[in-house]
Length: 241
Image (tube, rainbow, N blue to C red; front, side):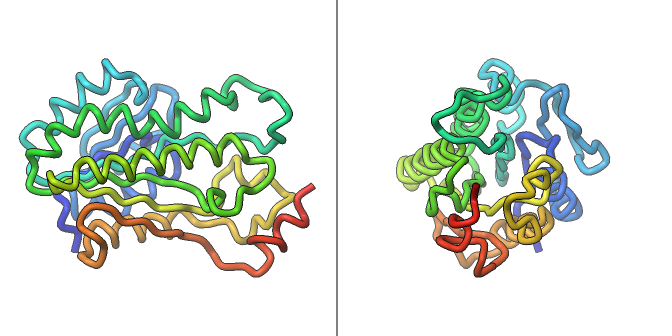
């Protein structure tokens, strides 16, 4: 079903990345890239690399050589950090949730591996980049301003890249997600946790987009969420403390 031969997952230590790897491992050669302290499930990946995904030197060293000569590959970026919710008027409570940290993990998490692989993508018969945005871009949820801004920047870069690389046949898929069912996110009891998105559902959509021909040749975008009358727009916003 899947007609992508090689899949490189950046940020392979998170639940979303592992869910995607599990869906694709039977039909593609799946390669995981994770930082040293990430929890990568080695059994899901045919090949594994451990280094800082935001390091240009490390990325060039590994990904440029890895994708050289590949005729058909996809790069999926799962590095975007989701911060603790807080007002824009307050400084972050931890270094991990710093403004620059959120931007770097979401924006450079795509840009660094993209720059390391794009030359080989241009020469490939088929190359696809998959990135993850957020439905918060549309609704501008309170307490998520820095995260939303980072996802807006990511989307803008991906669309720009798709315009620049259309002549080379490189494809880009950008999927906007609602809040995922992950340990950190489930701590936010003030929101509708019951409507959080299961990572397996996202993985199913990733597999669909990689195997299907029902999207545009160079750029495709979709919103993935569990519908709820209470979760979006005024119903949601009115209950945020």
